[in-house]
Image (cartoon, rainbow, N blue to C red; front, top):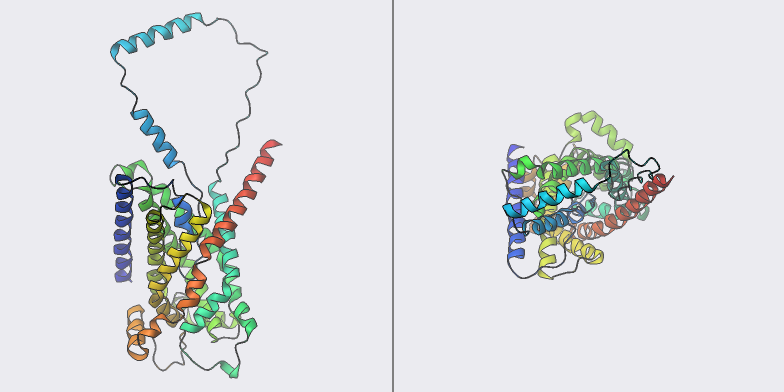
Length: 392
């Protein structure tokens, strides 16, 4: 486990360094397109083949930076200017009328309601968006799992029908989608706040893309605490090992707590690099194509970046699926990520490491678009309700 976490940490350092360097090159070279909503892109790419990303709202970093630059360009006042300013202030003070305040003055206006979502509202938006994407794309997830799992006869000679594509494993998928999304989003927001703290900023210089990349990767890592049990209960049913989720849950219960986290290392080694690569490809495409700051462009490029990352990391997904869907009746058991990859390569060839790449890519490519659309709609409704309550 320590070696796997070290690999993830090293990958994060390299990816964040790339993001930092790419941003510096973009600003030192020719003009770049309008500001990209990096928070939304980072969260939209967050997760793995079984993780639905959650966009986050844009912040005011760019606007704040512009004001700071404008302020720093103002000339430094001279002592003579300061003295003149003091004299003018004294004259203005002496000219003010004395006496009690006007009792008939109008009351202070009510403060305007903030258009920004609160921390809890952001979690609601992300969780609902993840649930929607999980349900809509579940058939492609089932096809991917069946393509990657070890081939075996169905129990009792049962056949896998068309309806099973939509229903197999849907219970754990729906039941745990929102909790996983909430934990992922909470960690994402907490990490973003921590990386933006003055204490850290005084020690480590990170630009916004690097902060987004690290925060979203940490969100994917935290979500694995719920996502791995979700997969352990879902994938064996999708692969046909059990008739339903209840049977899978009974088998996991007999295996003890460790059985619930089988394939945890493979999931982390798939989800975190997928998030980092997807986000890196997204930003590279955005800069290379000089794409405008447009929602349609962002969704299309996020789909392209996520699809490329999905293809590259398919072997890790195959290893995860083999670990989670192996049965005690199998003659030889897989014993870890790299053991599984080596055995599949030796026994079945390179092609077996990329089984299910098409449904996996089809599953991941539209994730960003679906989550983005659902997130924005839920956010719009929450803001509308907030303004309606404030107007009462």
